[in-house]
Length: 197
Ligand SMILES: [Fe+2]
Ligand SMILES: [Fe+2]
Image 1 (cartoon, rainbow, N blue to C red):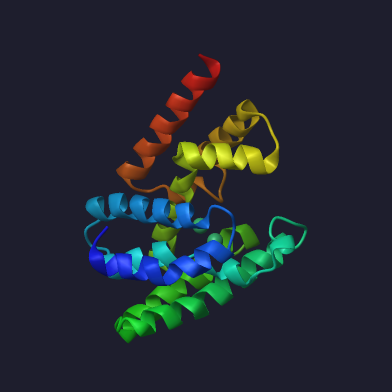
Image 2 (tube, rainbow, N blue to C red):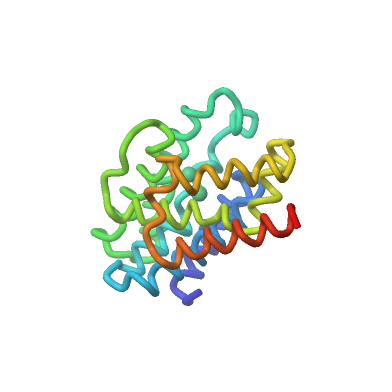
């Protein structure tokens, strides 16, 4: 990761630690996925997209732990986007990020989980962030963390992921790049092989 993005990562770290248990890892992985997308889609603004990747879920730091993953789910989703956008504005203001780019990062953060609320993602940049965010699920770390959190069998979680990536409107339409598509394909193939032999 470039030095200017590490600065953002360091300023966001206290929020990662106060957020969900794997938030530090989650943001690092989403930033790595974003780097892959940026290599393919060179028209995107790297500063905006990397800041979005590194900051998109920091709003969870301000949400009471007992509410995360509970029946408050929709409200939590909404709140972490709104609160996260405010925190990001603060962080980016500290490092002289251009105002216009701060606004775009905040727009990404404020809408990235809209599909889970039944709403569209309006900006193109936020839809690209969604791809990187979803690609988190194509890592071994996320796979086992999700299984632990949900207390389900690996086989069951693999079937859920297969469905998500092949037809679920909340996931499938966002995997646009060849980078993303091949990650999904390889991840599913390797995991199937590991679990089913
Ligand atoms: Fe999120
Ligand atoms: Fe995320």
